[in-house]
Amino acid sequence: MTPMERIEGELSDAQRRIAELIAELEYLLARQAKAAQQGMDAAKSVASYELKQAKRLRAECSPEALESERAANALLTERVAELEGREQVLAAHVESIRYVLVDAKRCVAVVAHPSIYRAPQYQPLAKRVMQRIESIGKRCEFGSTSL
Image (cartoon, rainbow, N blue to C red):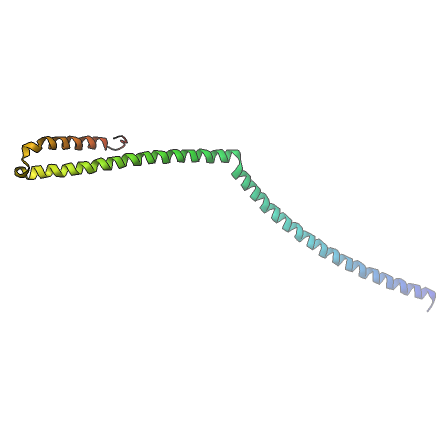
């Protein structure tokens, strides 16, 4: 083998080796590019989720949202106080009606058994009970909250 043939053989081996190294580098670069792309996709997905969360939290904590919530709470507190007041009025009405029922039972007894109750003595009571029933009936009309 002549020196020229030997050099050509070595050159051929070197070119083959360079081609193999280039192919290996291209393969490694492709793998690295794929891994980088997957990492960027994952980062983009996480960033998108975090951005949505940040926007939601910002909207919930914005001065406008907080003021709106305060206004709604104030309105509800006012409404609860109003309903509690009505509840007290209705409880007073119920208590008045209980007394009227007792008096009405007495009146029925007087009317049903005049000989036992000596009706003339119970006539003023019967008139007072009827007046009281009428008075409560007027106060219990729809929408009235006073006694």
